[in-house]
Length: 134
Image (tube, rainbow, N blue to C red; front, top):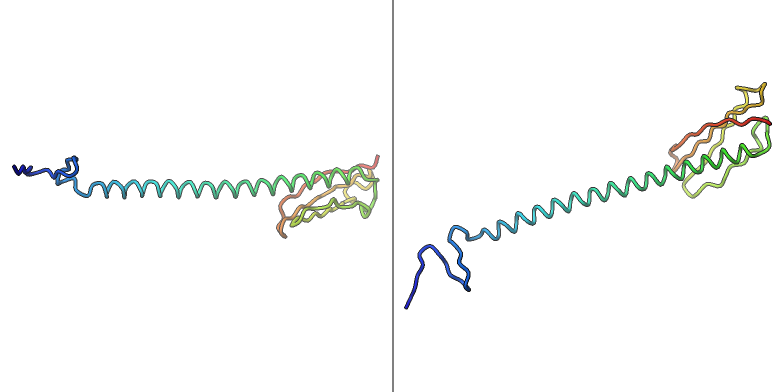
């Protein structure tokens, strides 16, 4: 007894319509495209996140260095020229410069302190404060 179904193909107990042949491949390609797009978006977000973390780390280090320099300078004995003020040690890749301007308020013995922090030869932060001879 030979049974034939005209519009169906019977294979291993599964019924497939002729119009559905190859639809598994199309569905697979669509799924791969969706997963690939999602993976690309995830990698781009991860890259952006790591850049943000690095930038925030650089900014935090710069702020701490500048604040430390200002605190050290303000706690040092008053020097009218500012020549005796020492710089705090900077981590590798960072540099600190201190500018002391006594000319603004020379009569009152007030100095304007300007601390500049650079990282890899690029200026990152400038912080200003005042020192008073008391």
